[in-house]
Image (tube, rainbow, N blue to C red; front, side):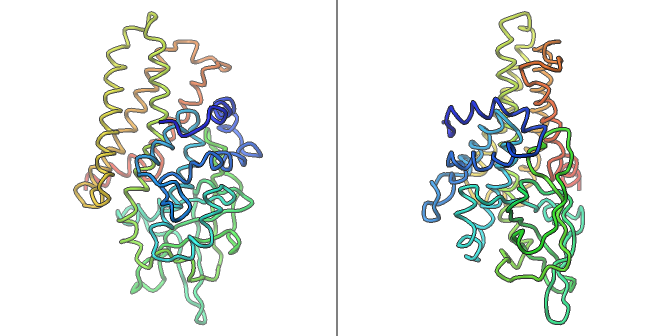
Length: 355
């Protein structure tokens, strides 16, 4: 099934290299262009203004985006994962206040929960603390890397720990207007148009309307399958695009790559099947044994993307290494280098599984 118009995918394919390398007006327009296609409404219940659909449908949307541009898919992942978090919250305020603007792309949203996922796996401490002074609670700390922070108007979801250790960490959704300090966009070798920056919280008064959950551990355990599961959409589309490029070359002297092509394609389809089957049952990947299965699938898909890109390089030969090649292989190679470090990174997941 195709979720996007031919007009949009042609535009994205044409501008993917520029969006990959540059911030600015074109990158800033990306979110609203994706939203105009109805992409963020997929998987959102109709009673909340969505189109309905499953988690697999959301991954398929992100897969179609990453087929043309990983930057577009990464932006889409940040927006859609934020939406999923406010849908999962018992607090109606974020939905009533922000959901309409999130669905239309008028408001961008960053998902800063990587720190919390690692915290719950005993990899690192939470970066933001809630301190109490004269009866008022304040947010203090820094999130070093959050994507989809369009500078004019954004929200961010993250976990914060009370300075009082007797209190459980909470999940918050905080608007830019609260007084968050945003850095300039971080400079990457790829995905520059994804509006990724660091955020600083310097004694921001805590509004209780921002609390999505007063139990971060329980909330993240429930939402982690979506947080990680939607990330697969970034990898699926990129791998498929590379494999399609390889397929076009098999009729020539590159036919010697045919066995590797089919093996890699089979690995890709196997991971898809296992992921989609697990996500059909909302509780499946929440159980500890199956959470570890999800982590392993996430590691495996990184290897499949790497294999796909290496095959594409071999299939394209010297043509793919030319600086001004029209194949966009160089961009995909750099995009692929990003996937092992998307948080939680492949190394962090290996660390968790080794425990």
